[in-house]
Length: 497
Image 1 (tube, helix red, strand yellow):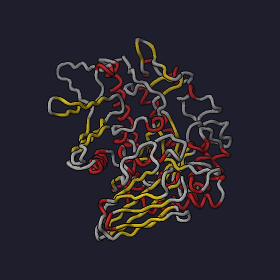
Image 2: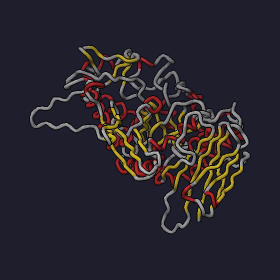
Image 3: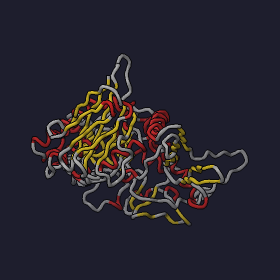
Image 4: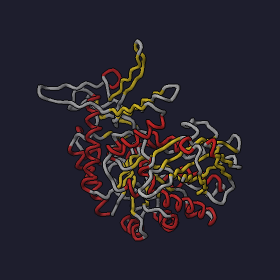
C-alpha cells in the first residue's frame, strides 16, 4: 500500500497491490508531473519472467488506485467500500462473533486437555462464540517445528481423546477451531517422504529449505489433494468450524519447476493457493478461515478477498498495541481486522481495560488465562465483551476517521473513530471513538470536524467504573477527554441529533 497527498489535504492518491507474493511500487517526478508505478513481481527484483506461446494469455497482478480531491480520510473511506465489494461474501462479516484463541499471553503453543477444560466455562461466560486451539495440538512435545505436516492430534496432550475434548467445547455452545500451517511441511515429517519432489519448491533440482521446513507448491495436485484431505478430516471427524491459517517461513526465491522463471513459479503457486482456499469455502460454506501469516505478514487484498478475517499482530504488549489497532483500518475493513485482547491476573484494571479497548473497533481475538482472573477483573473483561456485542452490528458498514491524525509508533495519545451509517428512520448520527493515553498530559482535545457546531451527546461506554471525564465543546467541534491514569484507554459513543 501507499498514499500520496497534497500538503493542503485537498488531493489524495491511495493504492494497494493485490498480491499475496512479490510486489513493487515507486513514486517519482518526471518533468512537471508525478508518477506512480505499481504492480506484482518484476524481473530485476523478483526473477520473474513469463513465456507465452501463441494464443496464450497472462493476467498481471491487480492494483487498486483511489483518487479523491479531499483529505486522506475520504480516500480510506472509498478504499474501505471498495474492499467490501471485491471480497468473497461470508456471513462472518455480518455476525462478527467473538473468537477466543488460547495462544497469545495464554497457553502460548502448549495446550493440554486440563488447561483447555479449565478455560471453557470462563470463555462461555465472557461471551465468546468460537474456541480456537492454537499451535501445539498435534505434537507430543515442544520440538514440533520441523515435524509438522500430518496434522493429527496428540494423544499425550489429550489423553481422553481429542474428539471428546472438541465435543465438550461444542456442547457448551462454542464452535471449535484449530491453528494450522497449510503451506509448509517440516523436514522431519513423514509427509515429506510421502509427497513427490515436484510437490515442493525447488531450485536447481533441490528442495528449498527455510527454517527446517519445505514450501509446498499448490500448483501440484498431490499438494491440494493432501491438504484438502487434512481439512476434510478435521471438519467432518472433529467438527472443526474455524481455521487459523498461519505461515511462518519466508520463501521469496521462488521455484524453477515447470515454469518460465522462479518468480513465475512463485506467482502461480500464490494464485493456486488462493484458488484452493476458495474451494474450501465452496465445500464448507459455514467454515471460518483466518489469515494469520506470522502475525499479519501478508495483510493484502489478494488474501483478504478469500479469507474472512485477518490477524493484525503477534504483539504481546498491550501498551504497544494501540499504535497497531488505531492504524489497522487503513489496511483492512473493521469487520476483518482481528485484534488481541488478553487480560492478565498481574495487570491493574487500567491495563486490562486497555487490552479490551484495543479490540473494540475491529474483531475481538480474546485470549489470556480467563480462568485465573479475580472476579472483579473478569467482570471488567465481560463488560467490554458486552459492549462489543451491543455495537458490533454497526461495524460492517462503518468507516474510520482519526481525530488526532494517523498514529505514530511513539505517540502519547491515540484515537480511532468509526462513523456509523444511518439507517432508515434514524435521524441521529452515531460515532464510536477509541481513545488511548500512554503518557503526556492527562487531557487532550479531539477535533471532530463532522460535528462542529452541533449538539452532541457524549457517553463513555467502557470502562464505566474507572475515572475519566469527557466534555463536548460544540462551537469548536472538540471533544475534551481527561484520563488521569498515565496508561489508560476509553471507548466513547457520540450521538448527534
